Figure 1 (cartoon, one colour):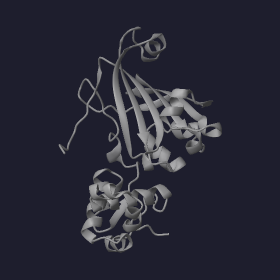
Figure 2 (cartoon, rainbow, N blue to C red; figure 1 turned 90 degrees about the vertical axis):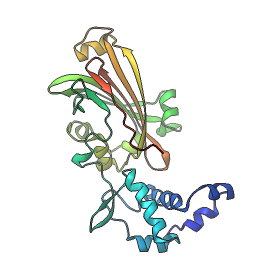
Figure 3 (cartoon, rainbow, N blue to C red; figure 1 turned 135 degrees about the vertical axis):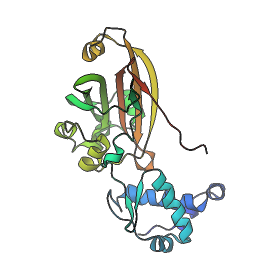
Figure 4 (cartoon, rainbow, N blue to C red; figure 1 turned 90 degrees about the horizontal axis):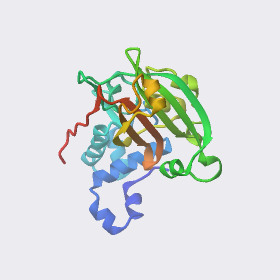
Length: 258
């Protein structure tokens, strides 16, 4: 059944309604439609007049809500064609989710090698981070790989993924080393990553990390912990990357001051 803004606003408190601009409700409603799979990656959204009629709002309000999602990278506008659900597979997105640069101040493009993939029971910390339930919901894929740039190991990566969402993922999918992982998730499992939280920490290399990266034990290591989310703010990926710490650094650029 089609969702209207009025029906959504009717289920929320008066305070919440008064605090949220109407275009934010349009944004929320479109995200709910995407979460249900009504429009899939690559699909074209209905024209703005039809969305305005469906949601019971003015066309400029729809345009503002859609524009918010375009700015967030969830949707993409194509001149003369319309608005589409974004895919994580364009070359322009190669470095969209990577903030690691080398000593020449270049984004590093890495390939995944020596991929090890296991299905295991989630430990308590993992279960809490991924909001996993009991039984089969508590099973995860734990994936380890070496990250290489120009044929040289520069980092290690560990992925932890809920098995219920990623049961169709294979080692062969991950070994397509030039593919953006979020493109792989979308294509193989229908999982779309919308946002992430990252922590950057300084560490000293333990013996195993030092051996894998060709450095001495206690060499400086740049550790980047990521938690990625899909629709409805559901966590779907834990990603831990350890980079050699003298030749690499983390750069975050904030383009908006609001």
